[in-house]
Length: 212
Image (tube, rainbow, N blue to C red; front, top):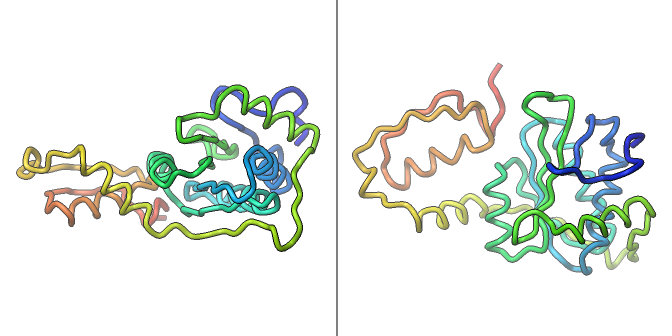
């Protein structure tokens, strides 16, 4: 946490070297600061990409949220659009996405969203104030938050985008989709089976993991 001496959030989120600048300890404190920003029993959706670094940071953030009496909904490995849409449809207070940078896998980035998009500037200032002053809300054991696994986020996403999709116009079209081993790899198979689309997939590892 040696670089956090002026500001915490930049234009793109909270970014730092995994396990050094954004260590598990820092991740827990970030979760505590986020949890202290919203009322107890609020719900926060959390997701990450397939990297070990992102997964480690995600679990740290969840631990911090729970310690402030906030409930966490874990989507596991999911792409950002699925996370933000799911949080909006479900009416969650915040959504937190953890990813590694494509051009520098040693660094992780944490993005925080409200239902309206990126959190507002006044919320950023309040978050940084809580973090730097360590003015975290602490609750007793019986008031700790709970963590739930989101099992329906893919169904919610497919249902929502289907309302904008004209299936008849693409029914006789063939698609070649390069998933680049991304976290949305599994989505195309769901859409293909649902709408009987002619889809050819390449570079689609399971749950976004690249095959060796």
